[in-house]
Amino acid sequence: MITCLTPLVMKPGWISVDIGIEDEENLTILTPISAQYRYVVEPTIKSIYPPRGSMSGGSLVTISGENFHYHDERSVHCRFGNQTSPAVFATDNEVQCRSPAVDEITREVQAVRLVGEPIRDEVQEIRIVGTPIAREIQWVIVESSESREAPQVVRVLLTASTGMEGYFKLTYRGFASEPIGVKAAPEEVENCLTSGLFESVGVKRVLDESIYGDYSAFDVSFYSVPGGVDLADMSCDRSAVTSKWSGDIQCIIVEIVPSSTSL
Image (cartoon, rainbow, N blue to C red; front, side):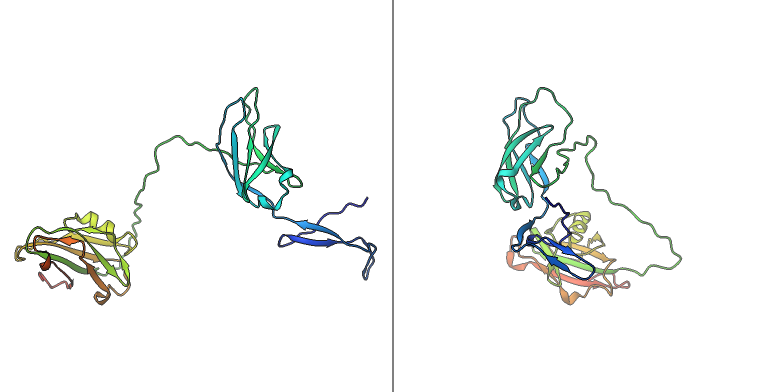
């Protein structure tokens, strides 16, 4: 009997195996017929369900992972502690087996064993008790002697005769904001505009008694658009805005320059 170690390969598949004698210059093959050897991808375990069961055993356990299908179904077993249970393929990447009965609970790691492959220890469940993870806004303050360039300010004005309701969307270069309520608070407008459309904006509601009828106006300050926002690429989708007289709804977008006090 001759034993040898398999060399590393870059991909799975069948190869020919021969026996020969190697000298300083070449290898002399001694076997007239080559044997076939198959390289397979090592299986990995990703999850187990359910993660717990009765001590009396008999629970159907499904193990999910990758590369199970490279192995003979007859060689697949589940190991629970020091006990094994035959397994069957549910899919190419899932095997199922029945949990064995146990007399006492031990802190053992379960595994799926495929003949010819090492057992891989897997963590089955992690429980963390504590306060829920909260979405926090982290502030980074950079002090500099240089003056900050004033942000570009754009006014968005929706008008109607009376009873304006619903929501609108701002679009910029093919991308649309989240729906913005016509009576939304400035903080809500900021959230809608920074959810995938702009990185950093500031919003202030505008009150102008010279505007006739029902209106909603916001001044939006853009801090993170290099070169400023091109108003030619910005539009207002007011299709979801309603009023008592639906034909008179207008949406106006205009840039506010520092010396300007009104539209």
